[in-house]
Length: 367
Image 1: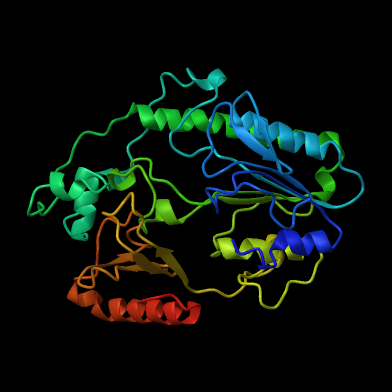
Image 2: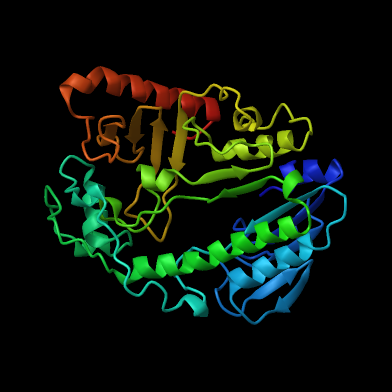
């Protein structure tokens, strides 16, 4: 991240906030030094490790013994316990629940009898999907998939039984348990310090994850399970409710600045959700752009551009111009039927493709 960018922590810091970043920075695998905008800094290089990590604490390398989620939580709780009347911003950015899924020792044998229900899209045979998806599902995303998979690829991927007790899925759930503990510790500390009534708590993730949907166990693709993330706001002046309006990760920065009572810079991308959180109509948005740049460790998954509207999704692949996808999310929320090749959907396909091109042009994306 360019240190010249005026991030929302820097904006709040200038407005008189104490600011802290604790956890995975994830934007430089070689440098874990403190970044501008934070009075308190606890982080590590790259993905870090689950057990006995090396941490950078305000510029000094510290060897710690213990489980990373618990250690980061304790740093956060300790920092909260030092708060005075001065307003504050705390970002607690956990390593969990990233692969390799590694639960805390106390959770290593949890949920031993757990059985996970089969998602409907596990029955996807990919007969009307791009060929690379059949390769990905059948042979994986790494480079050896190009030699291990049959040539030519089969027209469909044959079904196989749902693994209700698959170990990796169980380890994922076990690893989540420490995150649940962490949220409880932070919220309890706010209450004990008398800060609950004046503090907004936000919970979200950096990406979605497949837990068997479309027979996948990763992210990257433009299916709903991958591109969508949880977003929860809690605050004394916010009524409990669920909102279906489109919100993007770009909206987080202006929303937090707005909730803090600070003027949102006019050049800040995204739209404040503060009014929506308090019951006002959502900011206007009828579509958004999804992008994925292929990564060297997963060459089977190509560059992806997608546009999603409230009711439809169109997916294109710059390196595979003959293959695309179109889904009716109202009739087919599981994205099982690709409508891109159906004549009766040609007009809708052209409209969505034009929307995608407009968004690519507006954002300056390379296409």
